[in-house]
Image (cartoon, rainbow, N blue to C red; front, side, top):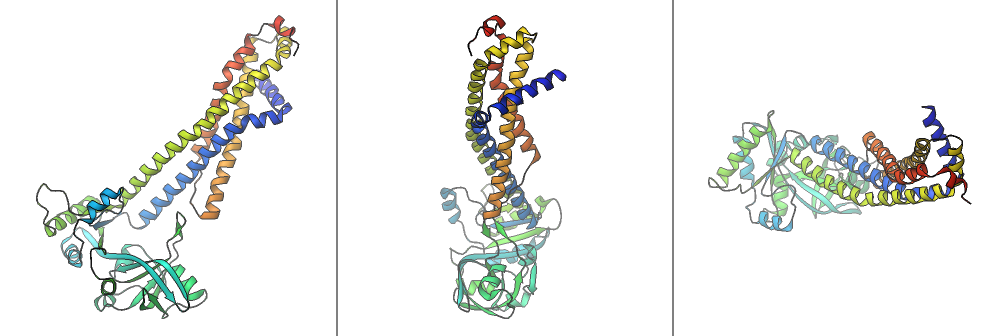
Length: 410
């Protein structure tokens, strides 16, 4: 232990004596580690955020539509567009026949302008909801009330608005209840304001207006461009029982023959989470592979600098060997010097990576989450790089002949 501590002490003194060279040597390691840490921190943050948001919608909820919620290619999009639209009749059939479903709702969506007084917004999400959709979607009402069956039955021009519409269009400090807004030119009376939901990946989740689905249909029609989705919640685990029952109901209604593929899609929350994790994992692997080049370059630079250091300190090595230092002592000293240098780079890179990720979160609200395992891994890898690339210079120093070393002019 004393031997290791002495070697470490000498290594630190050597690094401190050549501060500028040490810093320049560590740039590659710092860039590599900081890049990996930043990406891992941001990716973990997004994974947690997506899982929280998706499961917040309800782990027991599934969605039935003519197309899945996530489409991976334009070819798939064209394929799904050939399917028949879901209709309110399909929704009514699901509501009556799906005994494993404790709640069934339907929704239609589009985007358009919203005007309140002299202020307006563009690209606002306009939702046509059955009266029970706020409950299914876990949308809490902060002010006013939610929809009631009569709003849907009589196609009333009432609306539940998001926080952005209330604060930006109607005005902060102004009671929005009872105020009139125009959605795509149609007048609606505000009956409720949803609880603030924040942003997802920098996109606000509060820029929306929800209206009764029957009112939505009267305004936008029921053409091919407007597709209905059926949201259903299972009575209890497992979810498979409810989804299988829904599948049977929809196959019968859409006249899918035995052996044919479903002419519709059923999406569950776990499928969304798994898909996102698959995408983010692939992205993470690619980025780590690219940034590992920086670590490789950093390791090569460390090896070159250590070789220079051995050459510069040849006479010192000869003196130490003449005074009784063993080859293993010199091997340990130079290995520790190399590993310490890389480990310092890893620590600096980790701090920069975490700081960069947190700055991204502050400025564009992109979620981040620091994982202790990623910090430990970064330090372990950086130390390992130092040891791996320090073996050759250290062994070269340990093999020097003391007589030849003492004759060195350096």
